[in-house]
Length: 127
Figure (cartoon, rainbow, N blue to C red):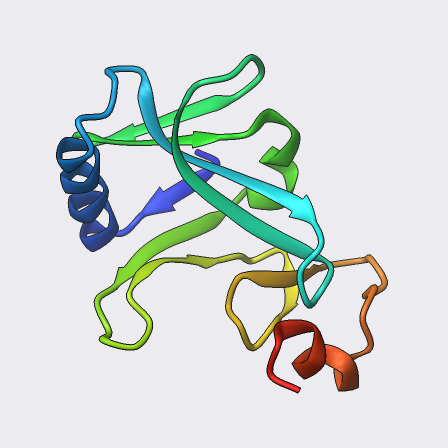
């Protein structure tokens, strides 16, 4: 298994797909792209499966992992937080050596960071 959904994330994702009246082949598409404060950033959107993607289904919840992001997402756990100030899906990535303060960016193990840690607040828009 590439990723794991917590029960809370599974229930929230299934409800989200129902509310959005997502197509039967759609799900939460998760990808990793170069950028963000710490080198790599997560992208999440409700979308259909693309060639090379891997699909993970669990209790009515479907996560689509972009084919070019599988190695950087392997072993991740997706949770859902309902905090008033920071609600949404959260990713715990065992392949991240550090995460940015904004929570959407991470530094991958074995790769130099493109942004110096002291410049992180500026890159996040907090400086």
